[in-house]
Image (cartoon, rainbow, N blue to C red; front, side, top):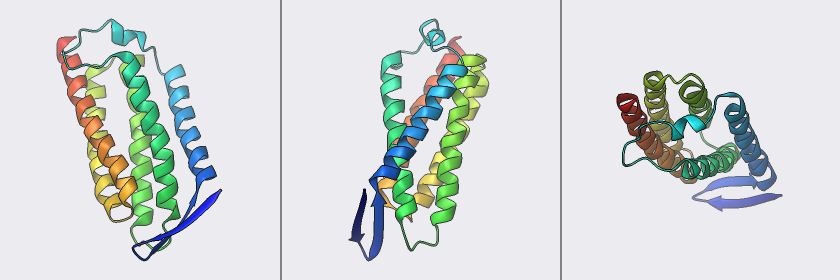
Amino acid sequence: MKIRFDIRKECYCFDLTRAVIFSAVFVAVAMLVGLFGGSTHTYTCLLLPRFALGRGLFVIFWTLFYISFGFALEIILSVNRCANREKAIYCFLLTVAAGYLWFPLFFGMGAFFLSFLLCSFVSILAFVSLKKLVRVNRFASIVMGIYFVWLLYCSALNFCIWILN
């Protein structure tokens, strides 16, 4: 189902079916990484700082992020005239792909310091993606901005877990 609309002299042809497919792919990859990347049971056995969320909330937040990534990617792809679009797509996908690596590093290997470094690196990638996406599409940049803030929280949490354990 395609939805066509014009905003600020930019033409978008948003394909809802593709957005749902992209979201499903992002969620499926996350599920595969979770299935083969280690056990979240580790989280319940760790000493956690007071600001740590429960394990169930993490699942909800990450699922919502992966779904929103699918919609953001479709919106980025639907922008017809934008010189920065290709670089924004590359940064966006690199940020998401690097984020997938965190789970097996933290839960599978128990490498808390390395996972903190990776989370910090993904935060930097998210910031660079955010700067590129601002020039392409507002919704996609908002999604990446929220993800960036979330990654800052995750980095702080990961750092505290590394110190406490």
